Length: 359
Image (tube, rainbow, N blue to C red; front, side, top):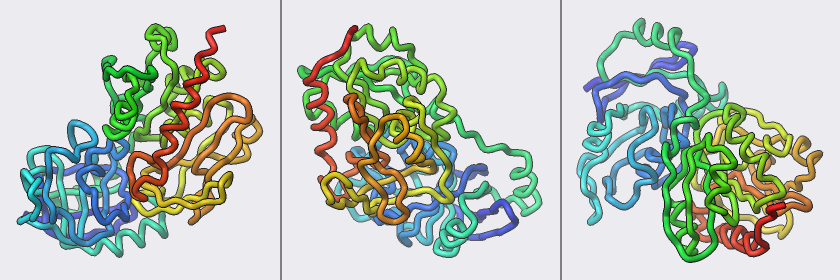
């Protein structure tokens, strides 16, 4: 099966196709992780994106029943130098080729993924066609010109109905922009009584369960498009402890009156260094985001920048000077350190011990 990657600007990469026979248009990004492809592909934050993996061999440990971060693949396509059709892993239940085929997702291999990553670093993330249907270059160019990339996928990436994960401890209301399963697990492992709410839930609906804290999840797209989520978050400022991760971090920044901006090529991988300015310690983090928080804007609104990225100095964490709210841009539940940042969930629990402000 022939595979092709056609980029906005005219660059064409031809290779072999695997997975589904399909053509998709999405935003081409790269990820530097050496493992974890199953969690990456099922992370809702990748909805609408085509992932170029910089590690050259993907699929060598197959696909298991335990490494899902959601119910299905959200990425629009996968690009890799090589794939394994014969995985070696006692937990494997299928090959990555069969998995992508069953999920209706196209993949392309035997292309120069290093050259693609270098192009993205130079030119920024770009619109891209991925096809395993043997379409001509002219058809790919037409599809690019006819397709506008969406930036509001958070409106449909999360739950559509309230879900309850019972526990005997603190009650956490999660505003779901496209949450990863491991975040919920990090809460339930601490005996939290978790209620998962749709992204556009009204504050009154959330307060009906009398939560001890509000959690803002990760998710895909431009945080400025999460208008309902921003409004709901703003309604809880000063009333509940709030903790945000990734998209939740950006939504919190917008809710307090700050601003966000799009990075040239984003942060995606499991090896990003972050410095904690308050402890002067550094941690290895897992990241997946295209947007960042503008530091000066949130600082004017009473926030303190607590973490910065060691590569480019962007904001990786913040807390309020007075209110019990904080957030991080990276994924502490991703465990690349492996457990450097687990304390953040315990910090949230400690804040919830202070109780609600129902006034």
